[in-house]
Structure formats: structure tokens, C-alpha cells
Amino acid sequence: MKIITVTTLCISLLLSSQCLAFTNETNKNTTFDLSKYSQEDFDYLAIKDPTKLSAASKRALERNYHKNADWFGRFSTQTLQGDFSFEEGVTRRDPSKVLLIDGLYYTWYSKAVGPSYGFGTGDPDKKVFPWDKTEIWYATSKDGNTWKEQGLAVGRGAKDSFDDRSVFTPEVLAHNGQYYLVYQTIKAPYLNRTKNQVGMAYANSPHGPWTKLNKPILSPANNGVWLGEEDNRFLVKKQGDFDSHKVHDPTLMYYNNKFYLYYKGERFGEKTTAGGREIRWGVAIADKPEGPYVKSEFNPITQSGHELAIWHYQDGIAMISCKDGPEQGTMQFAKDGVNFEIMSYITNVPDAIATVTSLDGDKYPGAALQWGLSHKYVIPAGKQWFEGHNQITKFTFRPNRNKRQYESSMGKVKKQK
Image 1 (cartoon, one colour):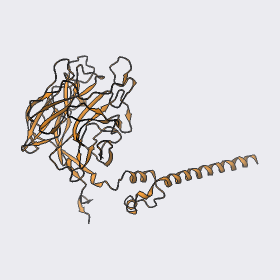
Image 2: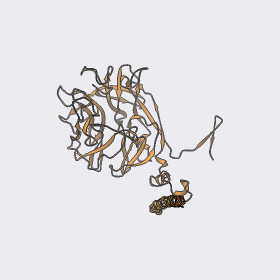
Image 3: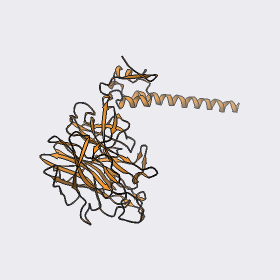
Image 4: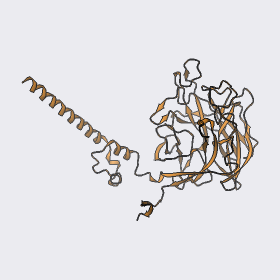
């Protein structure tokens, strides 16, 4: 009798547990606000019974998977001619936005020569990475395909200045007849724990001469704490803010009558997320292009994104994240320039996207990406990535908008009716 009682009790508890789980799941669905969605929404997402929604169906509804098809598209890349064809031993990388001025396209970029050796060589003068010991050059093109290098725009600073080791990853803004370049800087020596800052130069002409500001316009947060003296960026007592170690990839935008300086932050003791490296973006805002810039209290404003690719779209700001982080490969939009929402998921996003400002980016989502510049690595066989060089390339973007669907059958393509 005792055994039967225990068995009966166990069955009773099991059934109660299953009922409780079913009740909890039902309660989850009943708390989901279905009134925001139409039958058309449910049909598009193949939701047969809206009162029984899986977590995946809820995400699809909440994130508008069925409404943002216009934001989807595909990238392709091609090599360029002239001085942007690959040159052995020379790195050209991180092109700026492309400006169309008096019938010529202009871009600014990082340029360096010679091999890179990585950290730990024991020789502080050896070039560490492809972007080390770079300077900012510029080039022009009549058609966006064949480019002519015009020369140096902004060089490294004098010894002991904040930019004496490298100036790189430039971005350009044309505003009220002036041209502004923002770029990353490194002060020697270049070590694992070296902090990066953002500098600025301005000119009355795209050909210069460029006048550099004598101090950075943006610096990392000062609240990370290293552990020990070893030159290891992963050993920390305290990580600090998302940008405690480096401020990278600056992009200057004129928006809402202010100057928005978007940037990538890197943190002391970088960790790994569900999407790889711990990388986030922030924004700092000023009333004048030269600053002072105040970091937004909403920072970080993204949870992903290696290089910045950001542009005006209608009344807001659009961006695309190429890699690093759980939201890599997404196109996003913020009506206020700060609170970005995922609009689409894109594969094969090129590295270091640079948009063309003369394109009408308001026509439709992704119109600003019709074509632009990017870069790729050229790595010799048997070498590590940092031993290679970079070449500037061209990308095009084919949007999903008004795209006819096709079906492949036995090597032939059939148009869908």
C-alpha cells in the first residue's frame, strides 16, 4: 500500500507540473498583445493560431520580419582600376565617404608601405598591423572605377604628439563650404594596451591644405583598470565603459542642427558575446564641428559592428553592421539617430563600407548603398592576416525592392508568375 501511495503521489505531482507548465505557457501567450497585429500579419508569417505562439513567432511579429523586406538586399564587390589596383607592399584601406565635387569623385583613406609583424617583436619601431604607421591620402575619379592618387592629405604628428605613430581610418564631412576629416590616432609606442583617440583636420578645399587641431576631439573613457604590468589587454581589474580602451572608426554627421560623431568603442579586457567580439558603437554630440563633443548618455547605441557604415535616410539615420557582435550583418535605423532598431539581416557585408553622399539615399531603404567603396585583405599563402595588405574595392548593393523571383530547375531558371 505504501508503494502504491508513493507512485500515485509521483504521478499526481508530474501531472500537476505539466499542467503548471502548460498554464504558464498559456499565460505567456495571453500576455502577448495580439491587438497590434492583423490577420494579414499572421498569414504572412504562417501563424495558424495566434493564441498559441512559439517564441520564434513572437520574435517575428515583434521585429517585423514580414514588413521589412524592402530593407533586404545582396552585396557584390569588384576590383578597381588605376591607383586602386593592388600594389605589392602597399596598403590602402578604410576609404572615407565619397564626395562628388565639380564632376569628380573624392575619397580619403589610410596608406602605408612595408610589412607588418604583429606585437611582441621586441622592436618598438617595427610596423605592427596594416593600419600602423599610416597617413591619410586622397584620390579622385571621374567614373568611380578608375582612381588617381592625388597625394598626402594629413600626415603623422611631430614626436611626442598624440598622433605621432599613426593617423588612419578617416571620414569626411563637407559642411558650409568647409571640409572636415576625422580619424583615429595612436601615440607611440604602439602596444597592446595603448589607447587610441580621434583627431580632426579642416580645409577650405578638398585638395587642402589641411589644418590639424592641436588636441583630440574624442578620447576613451578613463575608468578601466589594468591588472598587473604585462602588456596584455585581457588582464583587468575593472573593464570600465564600452569605450574604456579605444575610440575607433569616427564618422561625423550633421544631423538635427548638431554634429553627431559616431564611433566604435573597445573595452579593457574585451570579452566574447553570442556574436563574437565585444564591440559596440557610441555617439558624441557638439554644437560646432570642432567640438567640444559630449558623449550621449544612451551610449552604447549598438551591440555590434566592426567598421562604421552610417548614412542619412529620410528623417533619421541608417547603418549597417559588417561583423563582430550578435547583431552583425544587420541593417538598422534610428528615427532619432540614437535608438537603432534592426530592419533586415544581410550576408556578405563588405569590410569598411564607404557610401557615396551624392546618391539619393531617401528613395528607398538601401538606396544610399547603390555603390560605394570598401576594402579587402590580400594575404599571401601561409601568412597571417596582419602580414597581408589591403586594397580598396568597389561594392554594389542589389535591393530586394520590386525584385522578381526566380526558380532554378535542372540548371535552368524559370520566372515565377
